[in-house]
Length: 313
Image 1: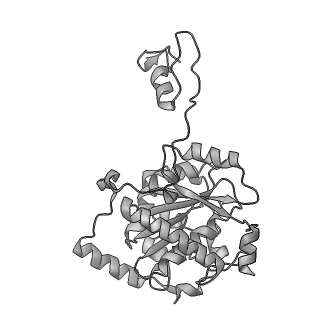
Image 2: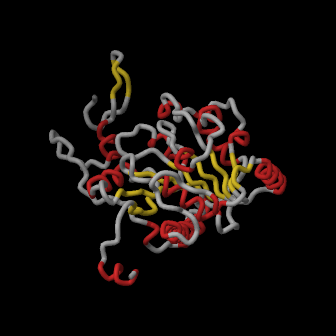
Image 3: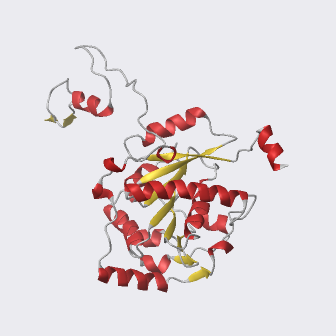
């Protein structure tokens, strides 16, 4: 590597890098001549948007959804109507195993409705629609939160939602919901299956992009422009108001960085029994500068407040 201040170039087949600019972009503090640069000491810039106020004046109008033209609206409506319906009512959507029910009027369903209200307030004011749900590691319940949130939004019957199994290395959303995926999502991302042929619908307002097979070399392949365009085509063909991506975990998973550019914001799910404060901090460091963090959802926790227990009694 070249010394500070030298411009990038080639010499005898080796690549020379301007280390001063590299250090600045990494956020490392400048050092005196001859001293090694030191890592940044500043605080993480992320703030939990769901729990704070939204400054409408600070919105970027370029990020707002552009209204569909009349001919596109007709095309989208026709495509949506042609999606095969696998459940006629979103309230019939269930999760399998030991996960609690996400149905209306259940404890989990009520919690999802609260999260829905916070989420839609922010997305409406920011003009966002592509929301990822992730966690530090596997097993925190991010698929459960993604499915419950999507079902909650669809129950409003005023917004259309697309729920995508974007954990291409280890898809599990179809199994969680007890549904059959129409095939590998890889076929859509490779351009071999039209996106509208892969979608399935639940009720009037929820569409599913399920997956039944892992995608080999997913992180590398999702860096390809063709795969990115195919993913966008999957969304654009039905023009949903909200897209919920069930993402792979943040830590020790190479796929997530390839998907972050396709998101407007993410929700981080923390396992109340296993996720540590250090895990959350590491996730914030990974996400910082990549995509806004909407907030942290605590899953698998129990209310140990004696006052709450007395109220329930």
